[in-house]
Amino acid sequence: MENNKLIEKYKDITVVNGKDSINILESNNPIFVCVIAYTETSEISGITVAGANKDLIKYTPSADAEFLYYGRCKCIDDVPATPDGKPTPALITKTMLDISNIPFIVVDSGVKVKPDIPLFSFNLRPGKNILKDIAMKSEEVEKAYRYGLILGKQLSKNNDFVILGESIPGGTTTALGVMLSLGIDAENKMSSSMPQNPHTLKNMIVRKSMKKNNITFGSLKDKPFDAISLIGDPMIPSVTGIAQGVIDNGGRVMLAGGTQMCTILSILKRLNVKTDKVFIGTTKYIFNDHSADFTNLVLSIDNNVSIFVSDLHLIESTKLGLKAFANGFVKEGVGAGGVSIATMINANGKLNGKTLLKYIENEYEKNIEKNYVKRN
Image 1 (cartoon, rainbow, N blue to C red):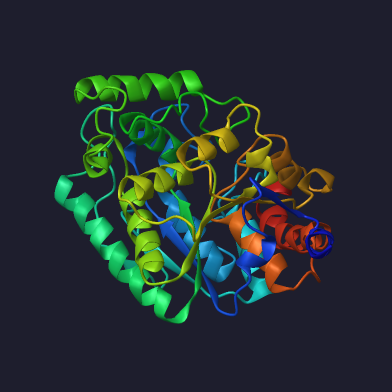
Image 2 (cartoon, rainbow, N blue to C red):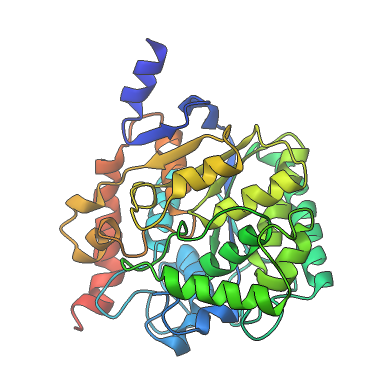
């Protein structure tokens, strides 16, 4: 009976794998951490929809971070969106943070363009194009992880529930490479920011990079940091470190995102970190993405991890840019799914997906339509 009441109370949050009840996510002091980073792999044509063109991709993570603080951007003239008004998922995240009053911080784990905001910097270089070079020097991977551990430990002193999100264009490709190196069958299972998922291109990039680095499937299963160094990106060790730092000090972690967060989960498992306090929070649009295999990918890594899925009813939106999320564009990012779940729980069932949609549409009208849709 109690479980039925919870389901009705949070009817726009679905629990997949059923190990945990929704109320395990309740917290009096949650915090959202957005880790921004860059990989030059994103500059390969056809990899990502992030940024209106190749020259703008490098601005995307910083523009997302600035948008969370200001509702506008300083490093670019407009808010992050495609030319026809498909917005950054940061629009959803910002709306949720404003409603819930959940505090947040931004961590720079290696961006090309520095955002004009207060942030924590890990003093890392952007990741290299894995087709041409190794992703990161090994000492940079260790530094990212070590700094993450330190920050996670500090966060756990005041926040028992840490929601971890990311913004890194092209990150599903590098995440794929790391998982294959660890022996996780992720080929053709990764999500994409585009409706036509470029699996062929991603697989080609990763295979060539693995061959260049003498990596075979699973050959680095006991060397996750080597996998990150050769074929990953700076976001991966940074988020892994933060997550472990929180967990080791008694906190709970929600990995807020799509298939990239599977890579974080897989490394935590390789490091023998207890994952009973790790959850994954995502959007319905990742969960229902038939061009990927999100759920089975998660469960192949850890079949005890609960997945929480938010439904923001974007398919019902009168705004075509928002409806596009439900039709395969973007789908997730900047912690949108996890933060929307935390917002509904923080409101103790007084907010649902349909209610939140109205707030998201208002934010869209204010910050997207006037800059993009009306201009075009």
